[in-house]
Image 1 (tube, rainbow, N blue to C red):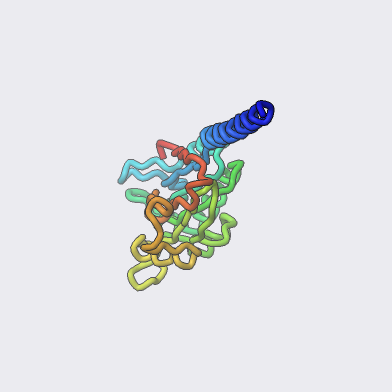
Image 2 (spheres, one colour):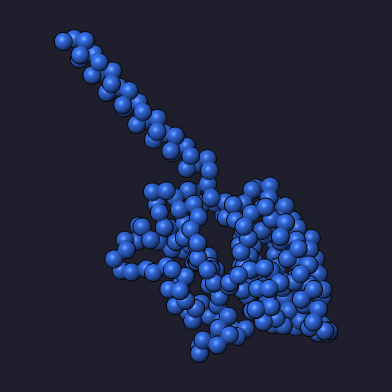
Length: 229
């Protein structure tokens, strides 16, 4: 009788110990392996500075390489550039020159960005399409689409193309209001029946949003910006 009681107590103790250990390991995993999301914006890669705006753009290679090295040293799980990767031909207070050279500047900037040791993504800015079509930009950076969505680390990330006018026509003067409706085509649909605690969002920029897709499996999110851009 006493032996059976002792065995039951032992089994119960082992059971509780297993649950507690598993819980602690899970908590430790969440803390020790956060999702590292790297972001940068407004590189404005160009071969001419702007005396009219006091904007220095010709050192874009140095700035971008510093960003890439910081992301690789962190290391980032993914990196998203948030628009105006290149400046475009027009510069206030300086001669415009040949717009055909913008393709070469984009290629040079992309060659540096490609050294990131993580998946990289692109949000289109208005300067990116001053001299290039959207199709040309996509081709040069090797991207398949300017709006997409995907899951990572318990988060659902939506990237939108905001370069549209009120008629839905491609333009330099985009609006997030005009393109938010495109979220349906990315596969994400938010309804009033979805509790806020299970589907919350934060607008990181005019064209990139992050949704909590799975709180139970979500890794803690850490973002790092490349400053002085």
